[in-house]
Image (cartoon, rainbow, N blue to C red; front, side, top):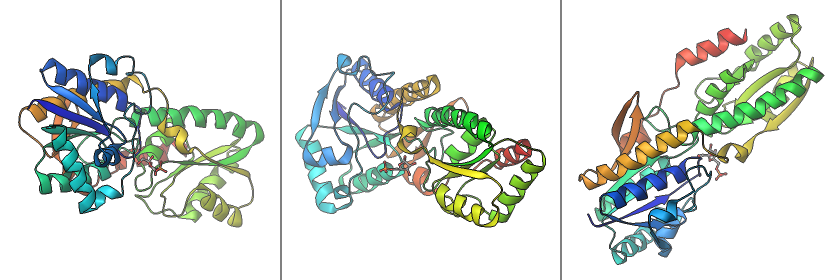
Length: 323
Ligand code: F6P
């Protein structure tokens, strides 16, 4: 392998830059040329390729976002789009590709690989932590720390005014952000898509808090919860239980930005490095992840089709500690 390409795809996540840096520097260390593809699969289709060298990834390990930009590509879902992407990879003499992204990005790589046999290796880059086979994805730790800092601030004002806050965090299909950040902020309840939400149960938790004369309560709601987002849950609670003055906050894209934590920088550096070594060793069509202390290799189809289970013991812990 003489020349490889790297790109970031889907929703950006803090640590993607650290991963790009690791990919570029590992490739150069091994005598392999590297190109960056801008704007994910969109840039692959449009031929938006740039040369990369050691200094093009200098001073980025601490930066959120992605210097290569990112996109969600509808065109890559079409055979015409994928054909153009292949032609551009060939025109730039690319022998293998590193994709940093989430499940949509890996599904795209899997389909593309079957059609055009260009080797791809993936690094899990998403704040959602919803890929099977890796304990954590790049960006997740930063995102839950961002949530924690924001909710700590909200807790101050909730407490001062004896208010009940419903706080919506990201996670369309998965409650990993809600669950761990919810425990870290001592939320009174955590609502996630993986478990059925009963408004009656939520009300009895609030009742107990009221009996204990709790000043202010925090309910963390994952955006994809089955009962609806935070506004909908707040409305349904209010209809049945009007004791508290309530407020709703949607944290939104603040969760995707910011300087990555040390944990995310380390994860990104390890996985970016291993992804290149894997590609050079001839393996492909898989995601590089971390399980315990070990680096693991998970076929794209397994990483995207299997669901990472929520840790039931964390759900129990949240319930015990908030009671
Ligand atoms: O996949 C990451 C994520 O941040 C999800 O948690 C969220 O539902 C979604 O992206 C938001 O996507 P967009 O930035 O395209 O609105």
